[in-house]
Image (tube, rainbow, N blue to C red; front, side):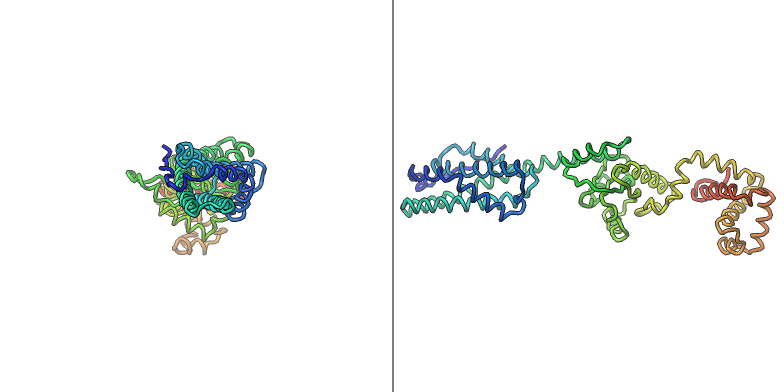
Length: 408
C-alpha cells in the first residue's frame, strides 16, 4: 500500500498569487534543464548517456517539477495522486539499479533548484515576507514528504526485485550448467536481466550436503560477490566467475567463506564448458566422501586429475583390475596384498629396489624376494611397457580406495 502524506496546510502557503503560479509553469522547461544538469554533475549514477535514458531522466524531472508547482498552486490538493507518482518514481529508480542514496540526492537537488526558482520569481513579484516564509516552509515539507513516499516505493521494488533477481540467477545457473550448452546469445540475454557480468571463464564448486538437521548451514556460507549459488540443487553448487581469483590466497578465503563445509572446485573452463567443470567437481566430491580424495576442506580438481581420470569409469577400472591382476589370485590373502603393494612401488620407482625398500620400510633383500615371486606370477609382462602401464593403473586405482581390496 502506498503511504499517503498528510499534505501541506500552512495558511501563508494558500495565499500564493495566480500570477506567480503561471510564471513558475512558464519556466518549467528551463528549470528542468537546470535540474537535469545539476543531477548529472552531482550524482555519477545519473551521468549516463543514451537516447532512452536521457528521455526517461528528463520525463522524471519535468514530472517532479510539475507536481511541485501544482502543490504551490493548491497545497490542499488530493495528495493520493502525488504520492502515487513519487512512489512510482522510487520504484523506477530501484528497477533501474540505482542506489537509494542517489535517488534521495536527486530529490534534494531538484528541491533546491525548484526553491531557487520559486524564491527568485517571488522576489521579482515582490511578495510579502510572510508569504515567502510560508512558501519556504511548505516547500521543505513537500520535499520531505515526497522523498519519504519515493523511498517507500524504492524499498518495495527492491524487495520484489531481489526475489526476482534471485530467480533469474537461478535460471541462469541452470542454463549455464545444462547439457547441451546454451547459446551465447541466450546466456547474454539472461545474464543481462540477472545483472550478472558475463565472464570469459568460470569454475564450478560442488558443496557437500549439510549435516542432517542443520537447516541453517546454507545461511552460514558467505557467498563472494558475483558468484551464482544453487543451494537447493543436489549437490549444492556455485558458479565462480573469473576463477583466477581462486588462486591460493583467495582459495583460503573460499575455505573461510564456506565455514568448514567440504567442497570440490572444478577446473577453470570457458563459460560454455561450465557443465564439464560441474561434472568433475561432483565426481571429486563423491571421491571425497569415499575417502579416495581428502574429505575435508576445499579440494581442487586440477590437483587430482589423474585420480579423476581413473575413477571416470569405475566399471572399466574394475574390469582392468580383474584382467591384469589375475595372477595375484593364486597367492594367499595377506601375501597377495604385500605383493601388490611391492609391485606398485616397484613400477612407480622406476624398478629401483633401493627406493622400494625405503618407501615400504623393508629390507632390500625382502624386496628382491618378493620381486622373484612376482616374476614367477607375471613373467614377461613385467618387462612389457604396455603391460606395466596397465598394471600400474589397476594397482593405483585399487590403492586409492581404502574400502576396496587390491584385487578380487
